[in-house]
Length: 228
Image 1: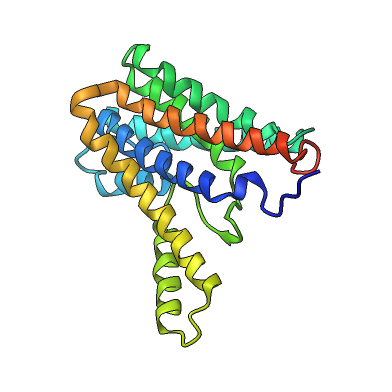
Image 2: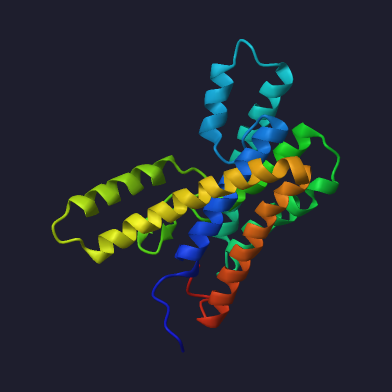
């Protein structure tokens, strides 16, 4: 049986695809709904900062995003606690993938769509909580922590006399995560005037790649009942 030292969910490919997805999803939602569904701390800050000026509809949408994200995260915990195989992660990712694929065909009811996107995003976030890019911990969807780690890693590498290859790889890994997040955001920004609501398919495509990469490695290395 082939050996696998790094679990599929901790692969560099997964981190890059999820980073791209996180940047794309939040920029899309900000453009179309004036709300975030992944970076909930951002939603909280926007709620407080615009408390005196924002319309009631915007306040309600952001509150629903926070509420339904929290519910999705709890559903993800329940799913994980009842998992019987490594494919529980696929089951938690699939709702957001399907929803983002169908979204351009659904009525443009902001409150409903934000609530659905938030609950599906909450499930996905739980799926990859505590994830690593190879052996280095990172956060998906929100990249401020990854950015700080990227700066720290590059500083440590560039000021080190030994120039450790492992430290360099760590710095590169964090750079890839941050770069993919920014790339996802810019991709939505650039393509939205051309594709409009269909730009959300960049999120769908990212999640299809994550599911395929993860599932194929679970099958290849026979991790069905090991990587739970």
